[in-house]
Length: 275
Ligand code: C2E
Ligand code: CA
Ligand code: CA
Ligand code: CA
Image 1 (cartoon, rainbow, N blue to C red):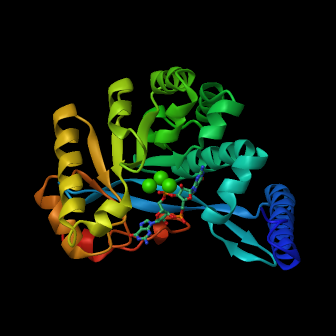
Image 2 (cartoon, rainbow, N blue to C red; image 1 turned 135 degrees about the vertical axis):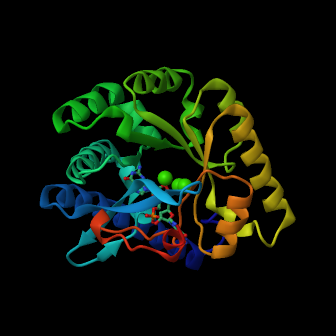
Image 3 (cartoon, rainbow, N blue to C red; image 1 turned 180 degrees about the vertical axis):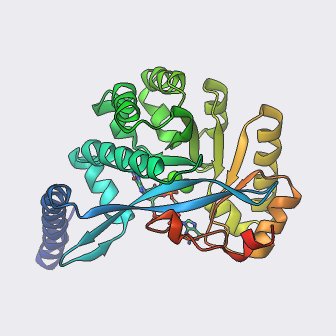
């Protein structure tokens, strides 16, 4: 179709294609180097329990500080890392670093790490996770993994892997809940420890009656199924108040605390000071 549209279009099509391929190849190479040069690091975002307004744990979020490109946001490199397979190595690094850091905190807080569906397909996750726990000495109950609904698209072998991870004592959290095609059916297939309501619903909750209805439905579902619901992306006191009134047990977002390099650095936000 591009060829029939004339020369100008062909050139335009080719150049954008070319530059995106070049971009990917460069990013792949840069990520490989970044792993060797230790350019990746983690930031931790607090998760607060609404009952006592105390911290229960942190989510580890990967960061990349490139010497020339500067800070590359995860949304710009996780996808490429997944396509070229580097996510397997990166994901293992994230889990090990997070467990080492949690051991150093000197408290009983939990840490959750994001795990890509690609890691389920390309590595023996139960074996890797149990080795990391053994090597770092972290108690399994302090570690959770956050997965998205698309791991269920790869068939039932991933449910088996989840069961093995759970048997190790690792918590399993469904992330971005409500954004997939059949979120509800996955709750039937696997007993999650926690479910995170996607932040798009939280952002719409106070303006759109539809978003509010979805949030309310997920909260009552969690209540009936005995699953803790985490609301993420909370940016205002009003959003927090709304969720507290509806007994949402766990909350996360800039209003609670921004991602920080160390947990000692984590600010005592307005939300927590009220305690
Ligand atoms: P996610 O797992 O849904 O993580 C939450 C994202 O929302 C983070 O973005 C966090 O910084 C941001 N966030 C938290 N609270 C607020 C808020 O109140 N307002 C706003 N505007 N944003 C908030 P981040 O760190 O840029 O990460 C983006 C995505 O990249 C993550 O989404 C996750 O899917 C992926 N990611 C991050 N770290 C890892 C990792 O180690 N492994 C894998 N596989 N994916 C990761
Ligand atoms: Ca997450
Ligand atoms: Ca999320
Ligand atoms: Ca996400």
